[in-house]
Structure formats: structure tokens, C-alpha cells
Length: 149
Image 1 (cartoon, rainbow, N blue to C red):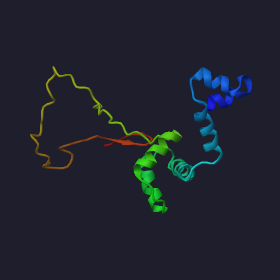
Image 2: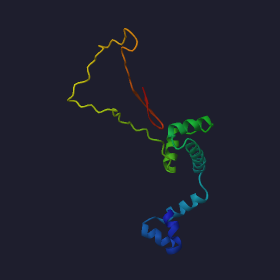
Image 3: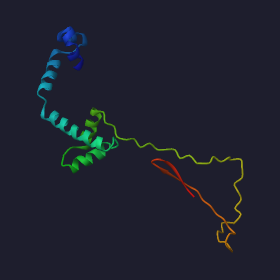
Image 4: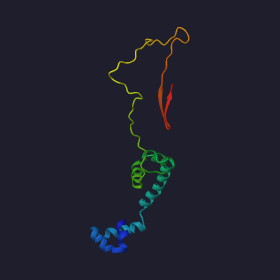
């Protein structure tokens, strides 16, 4: 119908509708609904405005379940499916958490033998400076990888 609105000045409404194969009653019904939307459409517009506010405040990370939760806290009674539909219509996606593949920091050669255990898992030292043991842990942060030794 928006195409008909765009082309009506150049070609006329009836001609565009005939070319598109759309009944004129469909077009005129759409025009009437645009001028006087139903209560449901008005509610949808108000809820969509709230949803856009919540989605923007979350940095675009909230999906329909969290947006629905915030709406309920604000006292707006609406189903999660309706929130989902309105978000889809408004083009508001939530952040996708993808399963990330864990890659080891060191790629082992399967043909080589592992390093020998020279202390036989006994980490007690008879005197200072006799036994040295180390470990490194990889910690992922928002700014990159952090190594703790």
C-alpha cells in the first residue's frame, strides 16, 4: 500500500491498483485504518515506543524475554509473544550469544610424548629453593585475554 501512496501522484490510484492486482476496497480500507487506527494498533504503537526505549537503554542487548520482564516491572501487561512480534516488526534484534569454540592456547603435536613428571605429583619440597612449580591460567575479559601465572 505504501507503494501505491508513492506512485499515486504520477499514475493515479486506480491504475496502480489495477497493475498490482489489488482491489480498490483493500486500498481504501488501508487508508481509513491509517487515518483512524484501532485501539489495538494504538496500544501496539505505545508498547513499541516503550520497547524501543528499553532496547536502546540496554545497548541493544535485550531480547524479548528481558524486554517483557522490564515491561512487567513498569506495570505494562503484555504477553511475551506480543513483545516478540512488536520487536520483530520494529526491527529490534536482541544480542545473540553464540557458542564459542574453545581453542587451546597451545596446539599439541599428537605424535610427541608429554613432558615427564619429574616430581611424581609430590609438590612438597625438602628445603627452600629445591622445587619450583608454575601454572598459567587464561582468563577471557571484555577487553581481551588476561593471563594469570
